[in-house]
Image (cartoon, rainbow, N blue to C red; front, side, top):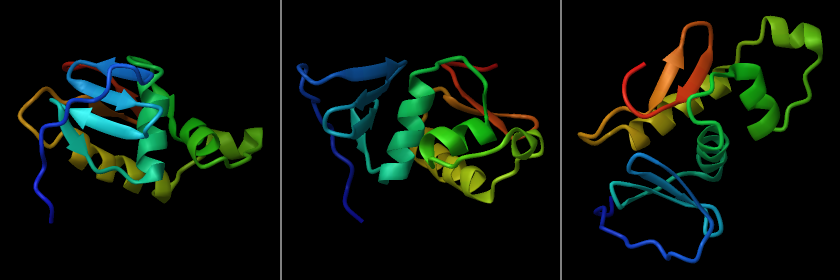
Length: 120
């Protein structure tokens, strides 16, 4: 496995930031505490979606529609449970919240998620 390294992301690229988590939208790169996070394209899309809504609870079916491009009917949304969303969030959390900094990815009871700085 390659060692993580400190990266200085270019200032000219459109970015999102929450605490020490940065997303370079142009280059599809993520950094936590200026350390590069090796994300898959799906993980990057999931993180970008959540970073555009800091502090907002996002339900699983919403993530499935927006990140996985699933087309769900209203009756599917009421009882939506997705193993793919849960696994992707677990993997993303291991990468984003691995360091000593505050935890940013939060699971909300009932299959929802939120990205927020600090405890809930």
